[in-house]
Image 1 (cartoon, rainbow, N blue to C red):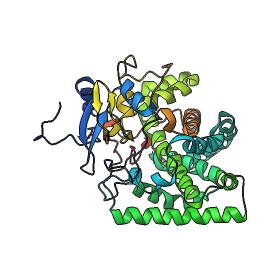
Image 2 (image 1 turned 30 degrees about the vertical axis):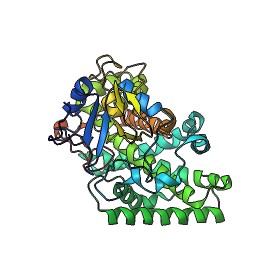
Image 3 (image 1 turned 45 degrees about the vertical axis):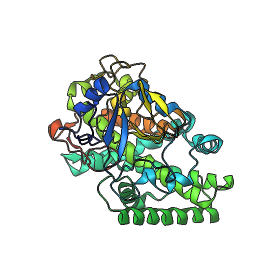
Length: 400
């Protein structure tokens, strides 16, 4: 498996034959080459880590963080700057130590279980409205466009005090900034600048007239404008893109083998564990999380030299038989389920309570309102989103 100097490196992320099936290389690498050299879309070399314990070890080590432009790190995207992971946003937001802890703690107040429970009724009402609108248009419908995308956009816009009527604009900016192969450097720079101007204008408006939202609440913290803007952009991208994709993938997984949907109809108390199992079993998760190793580090029996860009595949790790019994099987009642879908350590996903709540609410409402829901195309004909750092389905055709 280890390439010789004449062999081309395997290209990561790997291609798959089906949008809901994992690439065979995940299992192959976990077994034979858990610490492997791969080429990213940029052509740069990274070290791919695929076993559960190794991925968790690297992500949890406080010495290592996301690459910044100051690091000579591998670039994810095929543009000159290397995309969002190597962008200026990485320098504006604190990545290390006490400043990073303070930043997370300040934002974390908005993602507590108490706040999430308070948001549930509004989420459920919005989900019902979106489902009603999709049904009114007639079957088949696109559940991604009709429900999975607009719901998390509405929620994060409401939390940030951003008009959700602008959702198509920042959906486009998000796609460009998350691109690996789909947009040019000039398009990336334009999207980042336009998004920055847009967010700067919103923040200026909130200074004049604060509201009951996250951006208004951050103003008294005294953060400089570039940090406020980067935080707003980061929350807006993370708050809709990944969750919208995950809602569609979760429903697709549950309908691909309809006995799963039937099991949930028979026992709705399984919704919480079914959500966690969908997160664990996501075969279309994007690139994973990068870490720049600022010193030599041993992982999986291999010493990685200082300057290594480690690409941690949480999705591959989540199918590791060493960590999960019958790892390839979807067990709707699996508990405990210590998956790594949200990462681990100091940089674990800040908004995971929100994502979990949205996934649970959408699933509960769909089961109640559309018990006859089914895929309108065979599962192996579902089409993947290509060329972005996050994985997803282009659409989710359903009937009921």
